[in-house]
Length: 195
Image (tube, rainbow, N blue to C red; front, side, top):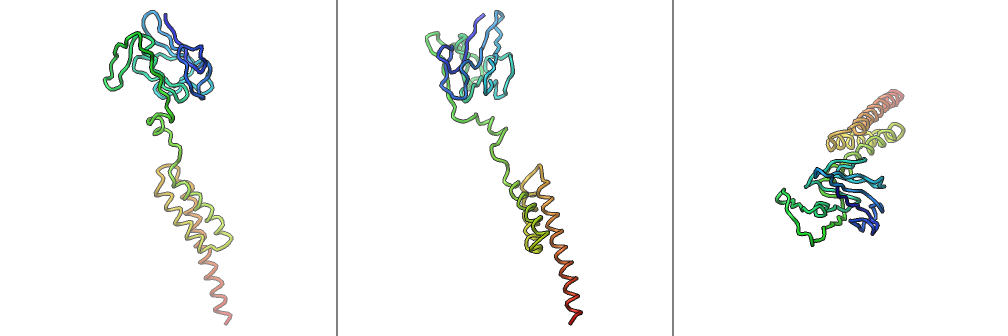
């Protein structure tokens, strides 16, 4: 059985210079049958295998990526084999070569695509539609009602999911305009008949 440790501490087999890594972040073990296991050592920011956070232990195979913080670790070279992502096969690495530790400034591209940092801007239109619709009930009903209708429609058009704010703003805009027109018709006719 062979094992390596990964973390910020210089006493680890693989020492990484990454402020998101714990002193002892994870351990990678090869058992007597040749199977590999990675174990998170209760790290603060978690250990990721193929960009999925693990808890406890998980089996890994040659070709799996192990990430601690923003650092991807070439763990295969410690067990006498390397991995070439272009060929998708195992290659032998000479014993004298040191393993490569790649520090990544940002999470990998596939990770960023799964969890975008900024939502679609349509939600801002939904919030604006809702606010102008509410204020339009009390003042400037015609102007704010029309604006609420416009922002609500833009929000609904730009967002595929969670259209509730846009719909609510659109409805409030329609109510604002309707109430304003009813008030105008009522007071307009009273004013007209009083002459």
